[in-house]
Each structure stands twice: as C-alpha cells, then as structure tokens.
Amino acid sequence: MLITGAVATTAGLVVAVPRLHDDRIPQAALLAAALFVASLVSVPAGPVSVHLLLNGVMGLVLGWAALPAVVVALVMQMAFFGFGGVLSLGVNAFNIGAPALLCGLLLRPWLRAAGARGAVAIGAVAGFVGVAGTAVLLGLSLTLSGEGFGPAARVIALAYLPLAAVEAVVSGAAIGFVRRVSPELLLGEEVR
Amino acid sequence: MALLGVTAYPTAGAAWLAERDPRLRIVGAVAFALTIVALQALSTLLVALVLASAGALLLGVPTGALVWRLLALEGLMLVLVVSLPITVPGPAAAHVAGVALSWPGLHQGAEILLTASAVMVGTLALLATLDAARLGYALARLHVPARLVHLFLFTVRYVGVLQGEYQRLRRAMRARAFVAGNNRHSWRSFGWLFGMLLVRGLERSRRVHDAMRCRGFEGRFRLAHDQHWERGDTLAAMVWLILLGALLGWEQL
Image 1 (cartoon, chains in turn brown, red):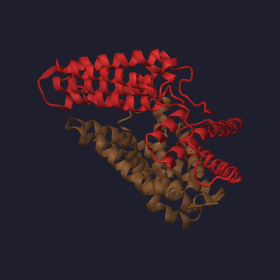
Image 2 (tube, each protein chain N blue to C red; image 1 turned 90 degrees about the horizontal axis):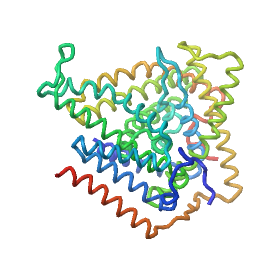
Image 3 (cartoon, each protein chain N blue to C red; image 1 turned 180 degrees about the vertical axis):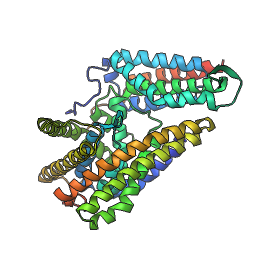
Image 4 (cartoon, one colour; image 1 turned 60 degrees about the vertical axis):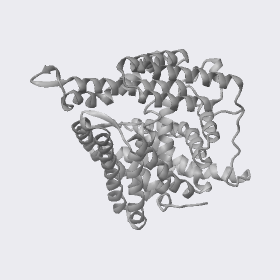
C-alpha cells in the first residue's frame, strides 16, 4: 500500500512538476504557504475543533501545481511537527492530492466562466469533493492494507463527513471572496 | 551560509550531528523507517521505540514535545487499535461486554501502534532537528527535482510571513468582537479570512517575482551547499547500518 501510494504520487509529480513554470514558482509557493497557514487554524465544527484540509481550494487555485504543493506541505509537516512518517508520505500525498487535482481539472474551467454566486457554489463543491475524496481514498488505503481494517476504515471515513460540510461552507466563502476581490488569481496560468 | 532559521527544535542537534552531511540524516531516517516496518516482534519494536526516543531526547527534542506528539498520534490511531481485536478472527483473549477480543487482533493493534510511534519518533529525531534550508539543499543533492526544492524553500520562507499576516487579520476580527462559533456566520468569516490570505499571498508573490526579475532571475537558482561527505559521515553511516542490522538480526534469534 505504501509502495502503491509512493508510485502514484511520483507518477503524478512527473506530470505536474514540468508544468510548474519557473516563473510561477513564487506564486505557487506563496499560495501554498497561505493555505498551509489556513490549515493550521482550528475551526469549530460541532462539539470539536477541526483543522481544514483545503485541498479543494488548493486544486482550484493552483491547478496542476496543487500536487507538488501538497507534497511540500506534507514534508513541512513531517519536518516541523513530526506528523506522518517518511514512508506514508506517498500514500498521504496521493490521498490529499488526487482530489485536489480532480477539483482543479474539472472545476477550474467552470470557475473561469462563473459569476460571483457561481464561484461560491463551485468553491463549496470543491471543498466537499476535496474532503470526501480524501476520506474515501483513506478508507480504501486502510481496507486494502489489511482485512481487519475494514470496519475502522468506515468509521474513520464517516468521521470526515462533518468536516466535509464545514469545509464546503468555508471553501465556498473563500473562493467567492477571491472571485470578487482578485479574480485574476482564479484565471489561472498567470505569468507576469 | 544564510539559512532560513526555520527549525522545529532549533536548540537541538548535538554538535557532532550538526557537522554530518544532512543527506545522511534523510537516508538514515528512511532506512530506519524501512527497518521498523520489517520488524514484527513486539519486543524488538519496543526496543526500537525506546532507542528512537532516547535518541530524540539526546538530540535535544524537548521531552514535552515528544510526549505530546506521541499522544496526538495514539489519538489518531485509537479507532484502528480499538477495532482490530474485535474484527480480526482468532482465539479470544478476553470478553468485554459480550464482545470477544482476539489475540491476533490485540497483537496486530499493538504492532501497528509501536511501528507508527517508532517511525514518527525516528523521523522527529533525525529531521525535525534539521534546518529547513539544509533539508531542502540535501534533497536537491539527493536528486529531487530542482523545481520541487525551490517550491519547498519558497514555501518554508513565506509560511512565517503569512502566519504574521494571519495573526494581524485575526486580531482585526477580534477587535470587531468576532468569536468563532458553530454557525454559518463564523464559517463564512473564516472563508473570507482565508480568501484574504490568498489575495495577500498573491500580492506578495508579485513583489517577490519582480524583485527576482530585477536581479536577473532566469529560472534557476544556485543551490548553496557547504557540507560535504567526510570520513565521519561514512563512520556514522556504518554505525547506523550495524544498529539497524542488529535490530533485524535480533528478531531472527
């Protein structure tokens, strides 16, 4: 499982990294840093506080660059906080990065044409898809790595549902805000 | 060399380790993790965890931080470890509220918990005590693509800046009596806050980009490295290999 994840992430990076034009590195890095900071904020969700994944927003804002950004964020988490092991990096990056890419590739073209309200809706969809996708992939990786994990995997995946709901509201607001204040951020491949 | 000065535990790192080639630590951490995953006996795993913890403390990771990280990890794994004795079939070790807890399940749960803890502590000891810039340079010298390394270094550099930006914005919200609660208003406010962070990030990236252009940036940075492989590194690598080999060998006994 760890190997499959590592291979999938590496394959994704082989496609994504050449698309990251040198001129766009500062922009991608600053946006990735902004989302990293945002994901450290604890947001109330029901009786507990949660940290948002924001991988849906990442996909919308960064497109293909979302995958390298996820890898960088995970390496930073590992190096600074000791979260996650060196070996699970590949699986984790895939579980978070693949939904981000999905949002980026499917929803970003729509976002370009969307108005202010449409942007909120698309952001909300991306927020939900990002978290739900990660929950499903996480459950799958657990189930595939051992039969005894099945029930636990389902419990863990279900626990992501409230997070997905909160993330949808927050992501929708964030994307709607950016659409109104700085639409060029969403128009993509901006090279100055 | 100008370093970013971003280290999880900056006081950490015994002098002899700080002088070692940082590539050694990265490869060492991966080798350690691979070894741990290959181990199966609970006793060996426990020994590895104790060794890793001792190493982490020796290298200057604060005791409180270590305990806190471990507790956070055990919390995450709780669902998994509690469910395994119930779901894995096998002879029952005990009955709790009419549910049989199987030996293989208990064993598997303990094994996963120890494995994850040992790998995490090992990573913490070897990588969290390393300056982020050195980590980036070392990754580049391990043939990680330069663009990825640049992205990493830039992100590390500006996380602190945007953290400050976030705190300013949050203070402004507090001044307007914002208290985070379980309601649409709060979540939308967080969304706008994150949106503002993105906008500020974009503005900042333009200035960074302009500044780079002014200095003749043409798509490549030179990656400085002031540390080379020395005899001490070979020695450290050999000691490390012997240690890992001993762990693996002990289990065969």
